[in-house]
Length: 405
Image: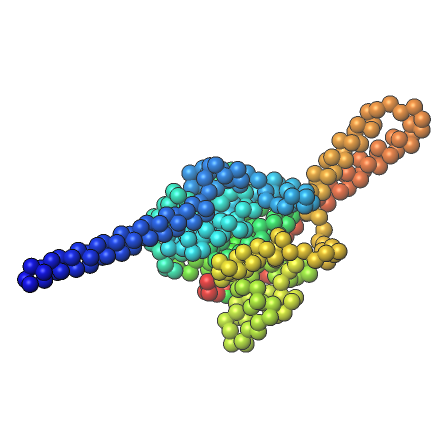
């Protein structure tokens, strides 16, 4: 009887052990398989030198092709892409790469000429630039200082304008090029959502993003080498504005020709259908009058903030895919002067060819026609040349505020 009990206990133990081993191995297999799947998902978001649209140089993503749909008339956008080069650097951190930054990489950043993801530590697989800082709101200005220094030192010749955005900001880069196309990057100026407290000329909201001309960037970096600027506060956007003001950089007016805002510190619905409480800090911070409802935002809006992953793709779809059939854009501002110059140059070449060719009949008429074309070139060129020197409509002074993110 004892032998039977011993055998029963042995077989029972063997059965229990086998089942335990089976379920343990199954769990290990599942975790390994799930890990490989997650890695595969991450690999989809990692851009390598094999991607035909990007070239990886160190931690920078260099855009090789301006993305647009096949058959779409993108001649103006493509020309501005070549003439108004924008480096976009995105403020992020190790914990945000998969939850936020990879969605920025997959959507709007593809329209930048060069993209840098700035983090506290380097991650070559993403890739990110390691700024050797801590993480947290108190580190934002340190990260901003080092990021702009890095951009100028390593990519100063790769771009004309330098955009800072958060990893939950959505930017319509093509609309930003339209704003910048009427200014010279050698002019000390920067643009964004303009706030007014704590600085004479105001400053730009960090969450909505802001863009510096190359000359503005040079002056910002020089401000620290000459000790005119220091790390005075962790409030990144305010400190940035105060430094740029000391260095003689103009706070530009980024509103459209109807005085509608283009940079926005909240998601679209808050501006379009929301009502801000009269006690809300926003009323005291905005440099320009707040407009609630559909007229809040330009048809050529540039940015929105607090955009989660799902909304990132939604705005991308609304911006670059959704079109009403049978309509032309209702808002059609003047063509950027930089394109007028190119067009006039082409017409000048054509006119020169016409003059050089012998004409047997009505030579005087042909000569007059050529002269008229040349005269037209001269007049238009003068207007186009003056356009980049145009200053923002409102350069008045006002008080300035703390960043609200």
